Length: 396
Image (tube, rainbow, N blue to C red; front, side, top):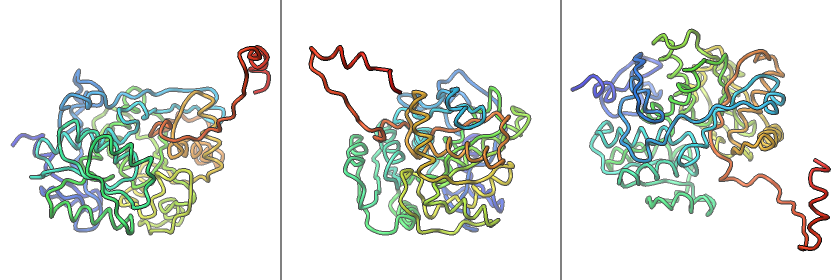
């Protein structure tokens, strides 16, 4: 067995250090597993995220997977003025299905094809949004059967987006947090690899966001939204590996942002707790990150503290202000990513982030799947159009 295959077939607990070669997701201690850390800085001429071959367990299978990664990192004076700090935005909405989830889906599906998830007949996920769409898309590209478990009250508009890739979609009535764990149990029983938000193979793909942010010039801090904790876990793993490999001199502070209406990780961080307790979440426009019982919440707490970062939360008014600022900069993101910009501003204003720091904020997904603007329109006839156009730009 090659060294790469051994690594991809091994799972390690970040908390207690236990290891297993079973295609497991959770350690016996209850914490999530991940693949062993690597320090191989080898890069190739492969496209997108796949050029970081030394840090990944599999190569690109080709096709749409080649379009994943190398998303833009852009700056805007308007955004910097709003945040109170120089901040670059990592635009993950440029991915094939419009979110960072494509990084995890592309790698995890490729790894399943290579046999790293054991003998399975299908892939699946538990999601009501970006991850469902992403998993279904990459399964379709690999000609793998896919099952998506969604909440019973999912809006029909979201179902249509997911259904275009022809997965088996199952509406499930019941506690959404329990569904996450139950899907993993059922996956083992029915030979389905559930590629849920923080499983080891998904985390391997999702760590490449932070790899790309850091390799040219690592920022002082990375700010990102957090929900289940899978993306945050990947970022933490990435900066640890890059530092150990000598590719970055200093590990950036990792700051994680939640919506204040549903902020179990922030509440645990503020209390000084080492474990995250589930909460009764409220309504928020950042519904995609409103996870009341995050499966990798404890790992996020450890990541923030280990890097000198923090966890914070912002309300919907702050998120709307960030959305408006981004839109005026010509950038469309979903509300669940705008919390990262709103959180950056809050961290600066509260003194937890220096105003002279170099910051990267992760914009995790496109806003084109959500309608957030008001469609105020003018009306005119062909003959009266001159009058209307004469007023364009007079008041803004």
